Length: 276
Ligand code: ATR
Image (cartoon, rainbow, N blue to C red; front, side):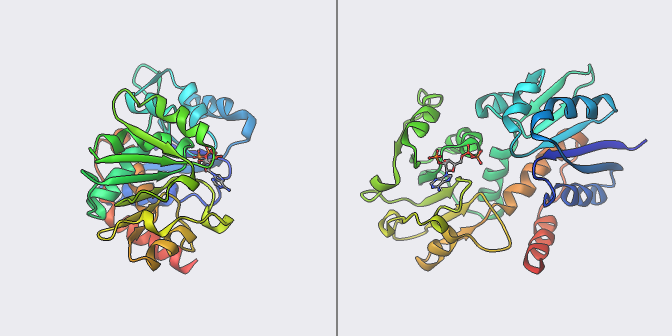
């Protein structure tokens, strides 16, 4: 029987993960099966049990189960522990299930390697303080930006988030209304909602005057209003498609011990998105 992998989520219909892993497998001549599974909200643990009992080797976990995946795992890596969330569950040789998190490295690799943007010494603004942001904060800090500000609708939530990181790095927190007096070189949108679609206004002056870069962790057929806003103001922009492929590449490397090439896969998905 071929080695089995899958992605678990709800919803899951539009997940690109099977395509990405099939591309990686054919590129690296690995023989495996990768499926997608719609998991009922209340039966994540039972579904994971069943998968691994049936001989499955590894899972990618997506919304809304990443925190549950972290709690399910017998052991977790440091990066999953800090994120409080796991997007990878792997069966270890002794049968234990290990939880890992490759979202942060996916984001950083996309920004630094694929896009060639600098994070070091930059003034970074992160929009949002939910699970997606929590997963990428530590890898961002490790890149030594000059400063990081987190803006969130619910400031208390951002305060709670940065508490876990505060001993290592000074992170400021504010609401969207208090952004006016500062400017930034790199803005990362980590909110789940299309903020600007929902009427939020970002003050123009938060963009520094040169080499501005705006990254949206979401992606879709249509460019987000956040990226539209950024383009109009002369910023370099990118959506989260590269991050998606890079986090998958890290999963593939953990499971198969080979690093696939991500560039052709990002290109393929971009074409699919543009024609869907
Ligand atoms: P995820 O795990 O995808 O990050 P989440 O934990 O529910 O999801 O977090 C969603 C993020 O989007 C939060 O930062 C949330 O802001 P609040 O903490 O104030 O709820 C943000 N968000 C969602 N809808 C929003 C809206 N209409 N306006 C502003 N922020 C919004």
